[in-house]
Length: 196
Image 1: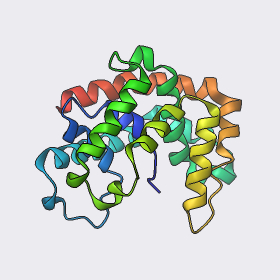
Image 2: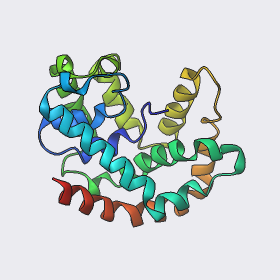
Image 3: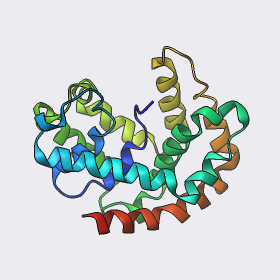
């Protein structure tokens, strides 16, 4: 399950080249795609996406966060943690972002996606008009936005997974997740900088 999961973090860590940044987003949409058919910058972004996922999944802070969920959510703890981390990133955007407001960043990325749709994997092209991506990214900032993300993810699954109930865990344990995120983010930023 990799739909709308930590998109904000992947886009922020995706570098300055629009195609490479979008490739970082495309990493969740390439199942069944011959990567050789994609432009080189998109492939580099996909490789960075995968490296970031491996780093994050193996980091002790992410493991702690996954362990904060009750047994009924253990199967989806990784997905929920990634979405929650995007929420925490959005809330700290002024501190951790690239120096432009989140709505402006989201608008720019949405415009880039529209401009470069032809270079994206088919499933990413189906995300819809760029304004939807923009609204989703900005929505990460609020608990209501996260609840909407989780509800939509849950509704799209043929096999119902209890994603929507995850927002209650975030609300109840936000400080603990925030501490985990603050332990992970500097290490992740150093990792990505070293990988460029």
